[in-house]
Amino acid sequence: MRIVTWANPSGPEPHPEEKLAPAADSKQPWVSILVGRNGSRKSLLLRFLAEAALGTDSVRLQNHPTLKPRLKTHPPNAVAARVIAISGTPFDRFRRQKLPTSTTKVVLQEAEARYYYLGLKAANGATGLSQSVRTLAHLLFDQPQRHLPTQSKNIFEFLQLLPRLSVVLRRHSSISVSRNDKDRGSLPLSAMSPEKLTRRFRELSAELNRHVREMAVDKRSTHGEREARVLSLRSVLDNRAKVRQALAKLPGNFAFSLANGVPKSHPSASSPDLGCHVNDLIEVGLVVVSHIALFRADAEEKQVVVPESDLSSGQWQLLSSMLELSLAATDNSVVFIDEPENSLHPGWQISYIDLLTRMLSGTNGCHVVVATHSPLIASGVRTKEGNVVQLVRLDSAPLGVSMVPRELTYGWEAGDVYHDVFEMKTTRAKSFIEHVDRALEIVGTGQIATEFAELKRLSVLLQGMSESLPSQDPMRQIIAAIVAVVNSQPARTKAA
Image 1 (tube, rainbow, N blue to C red):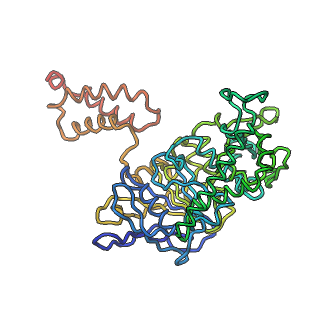
Image 2 (image 1 turned 90 degrees about the horizontal axis):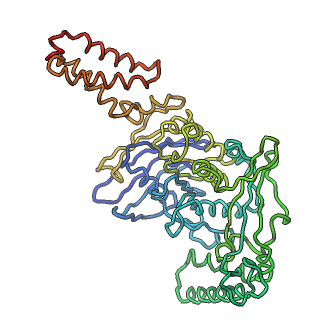
Image 3 (image 1 turned 180 degrees about the vertical axis):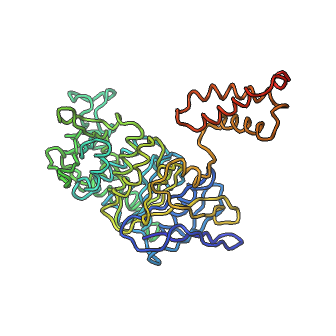
């Protein structure tokens, strides 16, 4: 599925459609790059498009009038199989979400079951690494065979990691023996507390009964997250004997890997049988994700453990977002990405679009919309595989923003992209250019005699600055010419 045009037909005046991408058939992922100045509403547009792809009739965001998103797609009236939102910033506008488990997807509202938020924000609004770790673990456990997708090998190779990882689970602290337990007896600290677990099962059973009673009174056709919670509770309580035995054996190491590029399943020797779906145990608060361990080969080709906490913010952001995308995407998915360049070295920004399309290589007909300030990302889209659109603030347009198609910049130098697409006159330091421009203005307008003192001051300043410029930088010649003009002035001008 591809989004061709969008519109917001709310308000007193009709708004024209804005074109996002051409209508054409393509099995390869199509990547639309959105560029624009700060304040050009890129994040708002991403939220608007995501809601439209989910079929939302109207959206009300803080400090904005009600929006009524409408799309035209190719093929016509197509429905996105999944809508995936990826964010490199905690300030994105995407809706927050609790990821559905395989047990509960059947009762969630259609939009909820198709939506995946792969970002830094938890459902309660908190942000941080732990949310990203939980999301990755959730998607891994949601795979029927519990293995890595084949295309994920690309991100491991890029980061020079082995194509495997382990998710370590532990019991929730509420059912473990603590130092404050007066009746812990001979049980060691952190061991499972049978009494606490029994009490927790009673609490879960009471919660289940309460939900069932309330749903019987409330005759709405669907209860969404409440029904999903009920299914998780029933799954755990119906298997409480096995769950009790499994919890006593935690923490447990659950391995996911590729062997020679082929997904590999792991036996229960390293992954204990928890009696029901892992994500259900996490949902009801009996199990938590402790951490994720990665692996690399040392100089002697031996495996070395790399905790996720040892990765830089850029390494973890790239690994988690790409791996989560490969796990979540299916044919005809629509993917929205907000500011992926955050924390990424320029060398990695150059490779971003290539990695992105590799992660989607196992899918057909996906459309990816990326909002970015990076010319290195914008120039990564190949001919016939994407397009570049500039957002311009326009009060009379839908959402107060209009879209202007730009030339594809694949293979361009970053400076050319800055100039032609991002409309920057220069990438040099602003104060440096102001000094040069002022000196050239004095010379070019014939003010040397009257402004000689300022010109001389600028020439001395620029001559010192030029020493740090690259030896082949043409700006050296410009500064040298300014200095030469100052030195060539007659003595009476200098004296004046």
